[in-house]
Length: 300
Ligand code: GRG
Image (cartoon, rainbow, N blue to C red; front, side, top):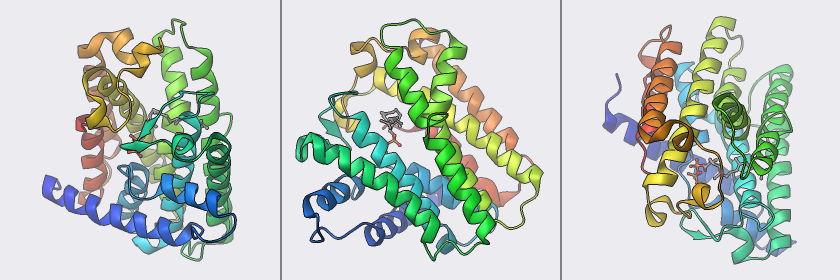
């Protein structure tokens, strides 16, 4: 099993790698329309855990794919994530003023610019998947990657989950309904972060792809459960975003349904199921194992 030091080192390297890969793919601040490009760069660069790129690179490690080939996929998935954060923070949605420890995009710029910055990041993500020379895979794999990301972020995935979330404020959801919402809202993009790397492997055995997909489903849900736990237990400074919003907005969440101890137990069970999914892999999947542990142990 990879040591915690090895995980820290991998995380540091991949975070720097993702930062540089994003930096060179984002439009320059002085390029027209400047304010839009400044907003895109403001929200994307210099913050966040980069969990989704980390998962893409760690899946690459498990499949013996060089990180250079995955830069396009890793940046595309992070661009979609950042667009979702910008739009989620808007007054029409969560109406939040703090994200990644700094003012949200619509506060630092304005609402219209924030909407456009999110839109443009989404378009750029697909442009990267379609054209980026780093993605050295056959055309059919590239198309499959575009389809994978589109499905993950569309109305059957992240945006659909967000719609269910907005509709469920003040309602009581049972566990299957809550899971269904989170599998879409947060889980789908986490799943895509792993599956995009699997699609860069040519050919990949179906059994290997299925195992990775199951791992990704488990950690997608454990990530959200931990997010709900942190929303209850942590503080605004540590989180870099407003704490206690679920309770304040009367949103259904795991601690409310299962209790804090029950939610922690459920996250632990999902971590163990994620590890089981990787049982056919050797040491090369240790970073994925450690990332699953990191997801349920993280402090922000
Ligand atoms: C508005 C299109 C649209 C979708 C919104 C995913 C989502 C759907 C909204 C994000 C808002 C949110 C706080 C969701 C809860 C889980 C989550 C995605 C938290 C933030 O992800 P982290 O912890 O953030 O990976 P960093 O900043 O580290 O990248």
